[in-house]
Image (cartoon, rainbow, N blue to C red; front, top):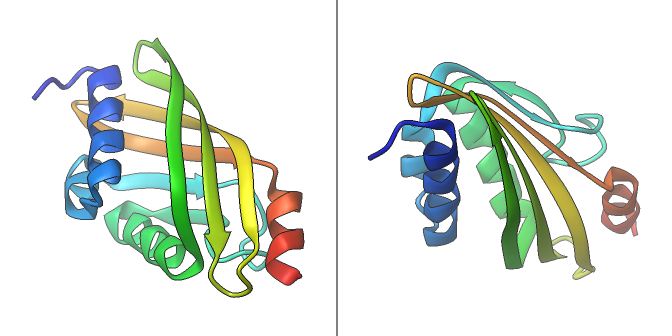
Length: 133
């Protein structure tokens, strides 16, 4: 298993595609900063979390909130320890059946074969509006 930043990030996306959350958590540093842009109280996955336990809480919130039908990392931009990824998602909100379809950007920092930082950006206003509908 390669430990360069791009390989680590691609491994994590592969694990996500298989639903293998333990494999993802195994690629995180003990103090990983895991953040989804947006106010924590506005949507269950928004906000900053810390460590593999915080990342697990993110995945649990996502699983309880969203039914994902499409998840596509589309472009990878590695630069040293950092990788920027552009992608697209299609999902249905479990609370109200509202379908969503939007682009996202993920930022990763990888050191020593472990992800030390993850940050996600997307149209949070659209998601909050659909969540509250």
